[in-house]
Length: 444
Image (cartoon, rainbow, N blue to C red; front, side, top):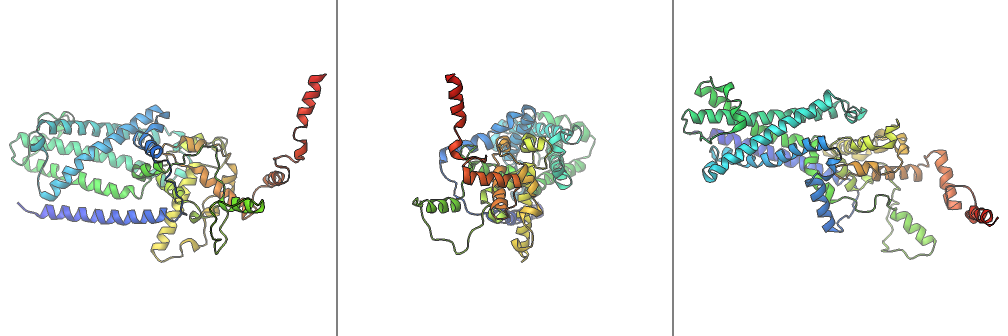
């Protein structure tokens, strides 16, 4: 038997592995463009959060119907890909259904389960295509999804449908050849779903059946490898990044805003309060807030790459619901796009962050930032614990503290906070005058 197919397979597998490794290094470098941040506290809670939210899909079930369909795709992705191990070994060793002789009747049960999940994935993908393109669910029609983002979502669904059809076609033709006595193919008994499409191929000759079966086999495994590479360029990167993203979730209370250490230390020194963990002053004064990706935390950039653009954050955003320009989903997409732009520039010897652009202004406008009410609805809604609010607050801090570019009403409030310790312009000593009036009225 010729070893040419094995050599071709090994070359394709090696090429896919090389391309995938380069892309993973690129993504890792881009994520680490953000500033260092240690977030390894409370590991027990972090493991629990990752298990429930990423693996258990806990937050998806706020919307039961799409959650159930997504669960079918998710389980199908995990379980069907177990069969990929057999595909890879068969491709390297030149065997066919390597595990069948060892598993006996359990192998047929496993293949039936894989086929059931393949059909479930197929039906779910069709349903999602209908939701996006026929029903036009509102959160899938926002401006930030025009062009490539919308096409990307449809491509993923279509590719998954085709790959599932390839599995069923391979099994159907495989069993027809086994029934005709071809020694290379093993009779597995009844395969329920693939047997339903066997009549389509019943009239083909043995040679034609082998051609169809081999084409389906090669199409499926090469499609899986190509899909793995494509995912790293797609919003569906969340398939892998959801797990570290949820592990590094912010475990603090949702309403707690993180203080800036530089400002806290300055205030403490002014008040004569000892500074905790004093460090050598930096050679260059740091930037207050964030203007570009490198001013954000690496966890913020990881959040951006973990975003699946589902739009649940934007659908819950009160600013967006009232017609404001802000879309938390767009904020995450913009951070990812800027990180990609800088990463590609660095790889080609370009200027990187010195290209005359920045996240603020060229991607995200002040109008968007100012519309945010800091309500945390977007954080609460995200199925994988992404935190758009953290990015918005850091960028607003830059606008306020570096550019003095906040609206006049905000500046008046800031001044009142500094002088009167409240948003209103009256003396702190008059703060409880209302209580005196209430007391007088109650005494009368």
